[in-house]
Structures are given as structure tokens and as C-alpha cells.
Amino acid sequence: MHSAPLPPDEPQRSALLDSLNLLDSAPEPVFDRVTRLAARLLGVPIALFSLVGTDRQWFKSRVGLDIDQTPRDQAFCAYTILGSAPLVVEDAGRDERFRDNPLVTGTPNVRFYAGVPVRTSGGHAIGTLCAIDSRPRALAPDDLQVLQDLADIVTKEVQYRERLGLAQDRFRSIFELASIGIALVGPAGAWIRVNAALCAIVGYSEQELLGLTFRDITHADDTDADALLLQRLQQGEISQYQLEKRYIRKDGSVVWVNLNVSCKMGSDGEVDYYVSVIKDIQAQKTAEQALLRLNAELEQRVRARTGELHNTNSMLTASVIQQRRAESALREREAELRTVIENASDAYICLDERGAVTAWNRAAENIFGWSAGEAAGHVLTDLIIPEDAREAYAKTMARYAQTGRSPMLERRMELPAIRKDGSPLTAEVRVAALEINGRRIFSAFLHDISARKLTEAQREYESRHDPLTGLCNRRSLLERVPLAQKRAERSGQALALLFIDLDGFKAVNDTWGHDAGDRLLCEVGQRLHAAVRATDGVFRLAGDEFTVILENVHGEDDAVRIAHKLIAEVSAPIGIDGAEARVGASIGLAMYLPGANGSAEDLIRQADHWMYQAKQAGRGQVRWAAAAPRQ
Image 1 (tube, rainbow, N blue to C red):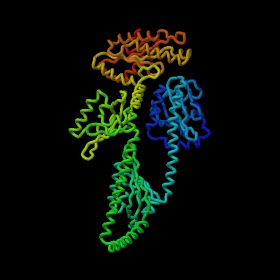
Image 2: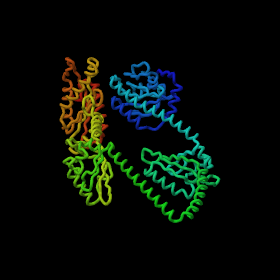
Image 3: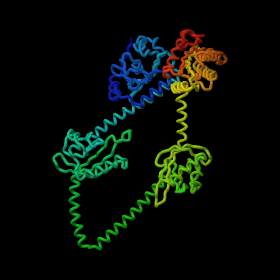
């Protein structure tokens, strides 16, 4: 067995791989999605994100393989990282480098391999994204591009983590060298990490602080104010808070600090930790207290000399100034609110108690086609509610008027709507009810999600259909078979699954090329679809493999008759570039009878098994689990 040589940058490459902390780490969705896509789009049973270590290759993400690592001297990927281009091995059994490799001679019986290097920002290859099959095959240019594109996604994620690691190193330096106290505090109040400046402020060592909570060293008179602000921060009412408080130092003395706290939220919406910045302001507080005492003495003298009239006048003046400031601030906030609403990307609509429009911003004009002047005073049913939904909308408004409750309030909903020209759209809506001066108003934000819904529907279709033939794919088959089994149980009628593999398809590809082969596969798919009932199902699994589900068949003979009919349909000549191509079909048949215990996967494996028996018996054959094969 040949082992790949080490690349020239092996020391740097290995060091970078170790620093990324990817080896022996837990599975991650960002990589698992890529390997699943690679397996599905390329139609291979195995897809891997492989990391090539010093003496092994370890699979960060894997599809279709039970083991998580192999020795490096057996790794196909060890060859891939030597070059700048993808490595494609069409038949490992005939390749001098791999034909006696244990991965080829034994499980998982590798025959086809295609891998693309995954590189760091400095160009060092730490691993590959690869696709593997147990059958020899050629890789079309489009499929190679798909593998390259998916490898680029993995590469970008790896390079992002590489940059993130550098950023974390810089943060650690800033954290340790800062002249003010910095700490990370857990949700329960325990110190997670503290810097030297904080230890100097409170007189504790780092290890002593890590065994305490912030409450343990907070002055008793300051705990309530700190706890209240912390609660508001946890509930999302504020993004951070700042206060002056007192810590009790290790020697029992009190030190005043200026505390600034923000929180880091996790993906689950819960607090991961708090970031606290602590500045020693003891000297400042000492000066302030001295100044306060001096001011108190001066104010006492002023009060004694100026009398009650001066005090009253001062209070009145202050009150007028405060009122003016409050009115000015209110006008500024109102102007800001109008500007925000008018320039919001979402449509904003305000309705009075009758449901008539009182506000209609620019986004509402753009989305629904009605100007603000046209919309004002009209009820919403006249503007954007589809005719078939108006009655339900009216009932909802009436119910709210009676009960003060509605399922539409304070939650996001997707609702149908129409534009001024009558064209439909789907809107994401959030409605709030407010009471102002004893009158109810309704405030609604609407976002046009029509394009998103169309994209979701298209993705859903593509996930269940073969992009070449338009037939349903393997995912659809795995969903359809259990449903067909349940219908068979209810109807008492048998179910048949035909596993079809074309005979002579490779010769068509070799003679006329892959484009002609694709056209032939499309024609075969159309013939199979036309030859069965509308209630039956035709699926393309991968390459030249098709399956057919036959429901409500009258026993084994009926299913065999249909199988021979399909062979005849497929075997008819197919016109390609002015010539005639011929292929045949070998079919494996599996029957499901009501009351049987077999799963959908068992049924598919059984049909696949008998298809291989049909192949071995000669082309154009049908095989099934019977006492003797029938012709």
C-alpha cells in the first residue's frame, strides 16, 4: 500500500489545525448541513469533512460512515492536501496508489473518491470535503463544481474561526493589561474570570475571587439597587446599566467603584455571562463628600440670609425650566417617532376603534399601492383584506370590541393580503392594541414575505424532486412507502415495489456523451410515468436507478406483468442526435402484503437485492422472492 508523502508545510499546517480546536470536537450543524448536501446533490452514499492530523484523518462531519477516523497512511485525503486542485479517483481498484488500501479491499469498499482541499487563510490545507461511493463512477464537471462550491463554504467557516481565534487572543491581552477592573460573571453571580486590576481594587487574589460571588463583596446597602438593575438587564428592558456602589475589600475597608454591566446572551435567549467593568472612584467619592459638606454649609448660610421668598422663587424657576425641558424632549421624541415610522422598512398602519386608517406610512404606500391620502379614513377591509377573508376579519374585530381579547394581538402571524391593483401577497403581521385617553387604537406592522414564501415553496419542491428528470427523488420515496403501506393495510390490497436499473446505459454515455445520457434518462422517466397509473409513483434514485410503487395490485402475477410491461417500454428505441439508442432494464420486485411487519427500508432493500439478482441472471429479467423465477 502506498502512503502519501508529507506536504512541505506539514509543521505549520499541523500547528494551525491544532490551534483551531476542531479535532475530536462535537458535531456541528454548520458542517453537517454541507456533508448532507454533498451526499444528496452528488448522489453518493458517503460524504465527509475530513481533518488530516499528524498520524490520522478524523471526520469532523460524516454521512454514511460509522467510523470517525482512520490512520493517515490509509487516507485518500492525505493525497488531496498535496495539490491545489481537486483529486478525483474514478476507480480506486485500478489506481496504483489505492488498489491495495484496506479502505478499498475492505469496508467501506471505496471505489470512487472526489476530494477538494480545505485551506486556512494562509493557504495551508488542513483537510478536505470529499464524496465517496462503493461503485466506480465518473464525475461530471457540474458535479465537480458543486463539490468545489460546498468546499468553499467549509473553507470560509474554517477561516472565520481562524480569525475569531486571533481576535480572542487580542481580547485576552486587553483583558489582562487593562488599568481598570474587568470581570466575567456567571448568571448566578459567581466570578468566572477577573483581571489583575480588579484584584488590586478589592484586595483579593484571583483564586480567592473565583470562589466568591459579586454579592459576597457588595456593601449591604447597595445590593438591592444592583439586583434591581440586574433583573431589568436579564429581562431585556435595558441593554446595560451603570451605577456607583461599594465593595467590601478583603481587609474590611470600603471602596467606592463605578460599575458598568452588560450581558452576553446565548442562542437560546438565556444569559451566558455578564461583562463587568469596574473603576476605582474612592478618591473621587472622598472629594465629592467633602464638597457636599461644604455645599451644605454654604446652602445653610444662603437659606438663612435669603429667606423663604427666595427659596420659593428658586423652586418656581426650576420647575418652569424643568417643564420646558420636558415639553421640548416630548416634542423631540414625537418627531423622532414620526421619522422612524415614516422611514421604516415595514408597513405601519394605525386604526381607530372602528378599524378606520389613521396612519399609513411610506412603506405601506409602496407595498399596497394606496397613498396615505387614499387610505385615510377607510376601513382595512376596503383596502388590503381579500374578499374571502373579510367576514372572518369582521368577526375578529367584533369579538375584540365585546371581550377585549383577540388571537391576532401581540404575536406574529402570516396573513393573505391584496394590493390596490388586486394582486395577492403574503404579509407577516404584528398587531398591538393600545388605550389612549380612554380610546382604543390598533397599531400594526406588516412585512411583505411573498418572495420568501415563494422561495420556501420552491425549495420544498426541489428537496423532493430529481432536478434532471423532474421525477420524485429518494427522499420522496422514503416518505411515500410508509404511507403506501398504511393504505395497503386499510384497503387489504397488496403493494409492490419495483427497483429498476438500466442495462447498457454506460454504453450510451460512452458513445454519445453525458448530455445524451441525460436526455435518455429523461425519456425513460417519461415512459415509466406514462406506463403506470396516476395513483402509482415513479422515482429516480441516482444514476440510472429508478423505482416504481404499485398500489392495489392483484397479487404477485399482476406485479410481474407490469414489470415486464415496463421492461418493454424502456427497451423501445430512443432517438438521439439522429440515431437510435437502446437500453434495457433489470427489475427487482418486492411485495408487501397486508399484515406484514416489514418496514419501508426493508421493502426497498429487498427490491434492491432482487434487482441485483436480475442483473446477474442476464439483462431484461425480473426477479422476486418466489419459489422459482418467472420469465
